[in-house]
Length: 156
Figure 1 (spheres, rainbow, N blue to C red):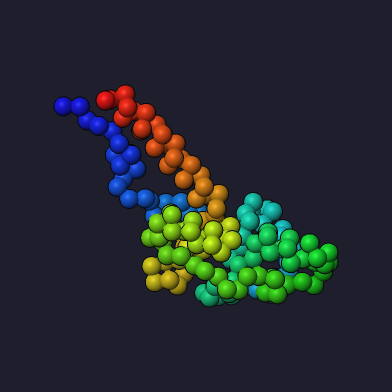
Figure 2 (cartoon, one colour):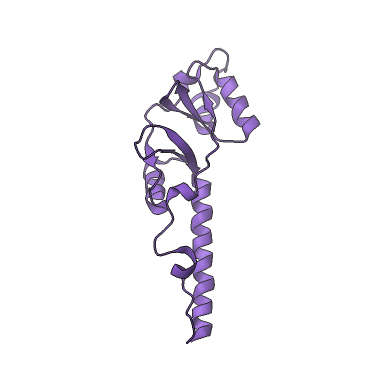
């Protein structure tokens, strides 16, 4: 009896949780740090988002986009500017077991490029997922589907 290879055989019955896509390496900065320090850290670490924390508490996030829209585009000097004054302080976090499509919907509806992933208790950050991570995953899933569709037609 021939075994039929399907998408479910390769990637499982359900879509992978966000935990498989998130980057577990993320960088933090203190709220009282300068905007220049934040920009330099992003450049050095090649990231677009820093978590703003003071101790255990997530105070907010600062992104390249925050710096560009709130400072550069308004032709402000970075001198004396602090992260706490330009960060996004109302952070929407997602739990580690969230499905990829749900993360995509949150990002799309809120115009976010990053999501902070927290532990199951919803307390501590455990990773960051970017729109790029999700799009690459969905593109791969689409390619796998096309390949499997072709294989299924050949087996018929």
